[in-house]
Structures are given as structure tokens and as C-alpha cells.
Image (cartoon, rainbow, N blue to C red; front, side, top):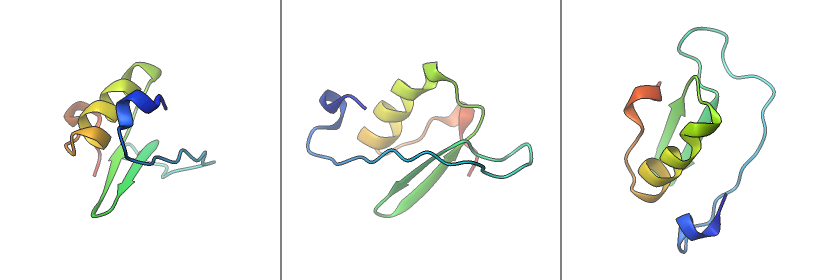
Length: 67
């Protein structure tokens, strides 16, 4: 993750082998101090939006949000 997006925040990226098994299963999870957002059908082109709209701005990316 490019540090210019993050300012002073610290972000860790960890691979997982499996999440869910149904149509609402997330394939990207974003955990914060007081939140956990699940995103499904995430493609590489979604990553910059997840960083900008969720991690930096504290919102979520509605069209791929699952939880």
C-alpha cells in the first residue's frame, strides 16, 4: 500500500486462504479500531477506492460492501 495514501496511519496487509463460501462472502476485510468492513468481488481496480474511501476517509465502498 502506497504510504502517500496513509498519512500517519499504519496498515498491515495479510493474505488469507479462504473467506466464506456463499454469495455474500468477503474477499477483502478492513479492520479498524471500531469497525470491520467486508468487501466482495474485489478486483485490483477497487483497491485505490478501498484505501481512499474506507481506510483514509472512514466510509465504505458501497457497490462492493458486504457487511
